Each structure stands twice: as C-alpha cells, then as structure tokens.
Length: 290
Image (cartoon, rainbow, N blue to C red):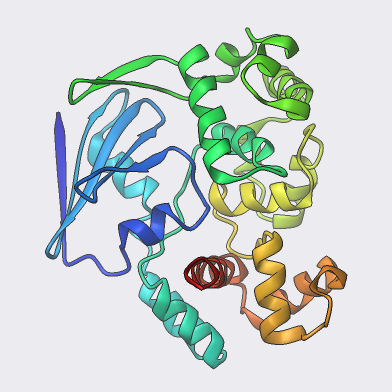
C-alpha cells in the first residue's frame, strides 16, 4: 500500500472531479472517498479537512508521479478560473458552483474505447459495460481485500470477437469497438504519434478515422486524454446551457453545433474545454436538483 498526501491544494473537490462526466472508473464509497482504477493501479482518494489523501496499490510506475500526472497537479487552475470568470457573470457563477473541477489526464487508449461506449448511452450503463469488459479481459488487482480489474490493453481486448463484445452489452457499438481495436493494434492510427501533433484539428482528423469516433467523441478524447483545452465537446447539456445563456433559440435542438463551436472559440479564450466542464456540471446539477 502506498500513500501520498497533498496539503492546502486549491481547485480539488472529489465530487466535482469525479461526477462531472469526464471519467467512468471512479465510484463513491460510504465514507465519501472515491476508489478508481488508473492504468495498472487502484487508488482511493479522500479529503479530510485541508488534506487530500491518496492511498493505493501501484504497479509499473512511481505512485507520486502517477498521481501528479493523472490529476494534473502541476497546473494552476486558479489562473484558468480567474481568466474565465472575467468573461461574464454566467461563467463566474458556474465556476463558483464547480470550483473544485480538474480535468484528468486519462489513458488515451482507455479514453477512446470508453467514449465510443458513451455514444447514446447514460453514465451508470457506461460504467457497467466498462466494468464487464475489464472483468473479462483485464488483469486482477487486489486492494483492501477486494478485487479490481484493469482496463484491457489493445492486445488483451483483441481476443474478443464481435459476438463476445455483444454479450457484454455493447449493442450496436460491438463492431465499432472491434474495428477500432484492430486499427490501433495494426498501427493504422498510432496513439504515440498523436501526442506529438501540436495542432488540435490535426489530432481530431486522426481520431475521426477510428470506427465509432464522431466529432463529439473526438472532442472528449482530445480534452480528457490529450489535454487539448481548446476542444469543446457538445452534448445535450452543453447545447442546452449554451442556448439558454447565449443563443436563446426557442428550440434548443435547432442550435447548430458549428455555431456553438464558433461561439466557444470566440468567447472562452482558448479554454473552451475547461469552460465546458464548468457549464456542463452547473447545468446538469441544477436540473437534477430542480
């Protein structure tokens, strides 16, 4: 068991981070802590007073380095929030509501498969499918007397047939997951090379070649695995909040995605992805509590 403690860390709220729609392998425990599987590690995160305590079983890499990278701890979110808060009162309010959000730097391969699964799906179901895939094809790790399973590598997942994937509840996504796994294994899309591209649009063009990756899924991957802060994923919540606040179309379904992208580029100063997370979380939680 390994431990790493952060003291007086700003912009770090467990619920804001893990419940803002960016990740699927973290679950809240009865004591308010969260347990998640990150690559080949199982981690519990708890916040007690002003301390954030990470405990876990870490394989293949240094625990502290994994935590600092995954939670993007060397990025100053106060600067982002200060910059975005000056845009308008709406951004100021949404940041105040979700002030503890941080964008996780997730594993690219896992992020691709997870967000293909997310298409036309809800978060509880997405989590269950990913858990079944991991249980069937991943590796077992024991932590605090329980069994957890890593997300399978492309090699491990390539053992699954389309029928196998369908049996895990993937529905119409079975062929897409199968085809994308083969494409990545065959280096038709080289994931390591993606990180070397400086232009977000070039990255997106590469991602769109993968079966099951449309513009919204590509933008999620860009933001949550490749840390392209100018990416702006648009789902029903983002369309709704952007329309409610800025566009005011009587029928939100008629709001054009290109119009939303353009507005985000002009308004959010290269930080569209972070602005999106604050607005998304604010709008969704408001409507849940209504």
